[in-house]
Image 1 (tube, rainbow, N blue to C red):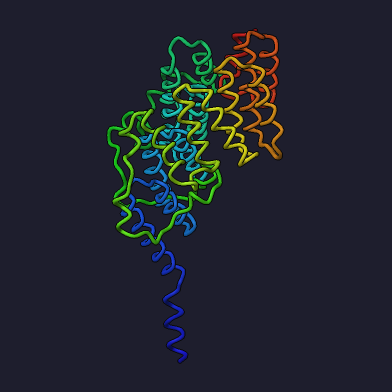
Image 2 (cartoon, rainbow, N blue to C red):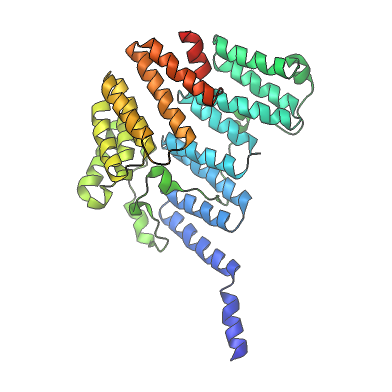
Length: 365
């Protein structure tokens, strides 16, 4: 009896439990190939088992898949999470910066590139730092602020751009444009811990059932990347009507994003307000609500949303800066340059490298 007990006990070792769950998740992924959330769950599973390399590889796969579906906010959140897990993921900095720049988040992208250049320099990788600085200059060759930013970097470090370029790479480093030519999906998908539910909005409807049947694979909807924006909106609306379970904060937030990107600000506001009704602490909703109101030139309403966002309990410094920056842009669009300048200077005191705040101050001074 003793030996039988020990035998059964060994079958439930941590490694065995890990492998069993991984098999279930992979089976679910095979049955629902378009459901990227399952890959996120796989990544979390790897990270919990301290398999960081596999976790990061799977997160990268998931981020690229979300990009294909044009769910840029989620892809950006995943890339940021990878950097938190491993700050030395240089290529991820570049991927994220390029994604932000491509989607008109130019200030964020340039700020990230500047951070990467400093990171390279501190690691003794001066050539690599010069390559990143060259990329900043190419973002907008006519932007005096970006040119000054690059010049200041070289001057502060007492370095010459030509000297840094002649050093050659410290490792087999390449620019992201070159890396993308060899873009390969990992054959064995693996990821790291990432709270997708937090990004989408906490809601039980986003939980994954790993005991999925094979027949469920036949019920998949048409991939988002093959559908027009109007078709995506129609599909989302039909989902709400067909299943009450879809009527939740996360769903309304994503519906709002789809409308926001189509410049349908009135409709987007309705969706974001329904989302925030179910989650009063969703600061991203307040940011988007303010952006919608600004797009409608309803500045009073935009400031109201900013105020509500800033009043959220335990708001972090990053969100506070984001909301204040949006407030500054609202004043600027309204034509109240004095108030806009005051807000931007307030932001600069807290973080002088925040997005394009220096550039905004230069324009208004």
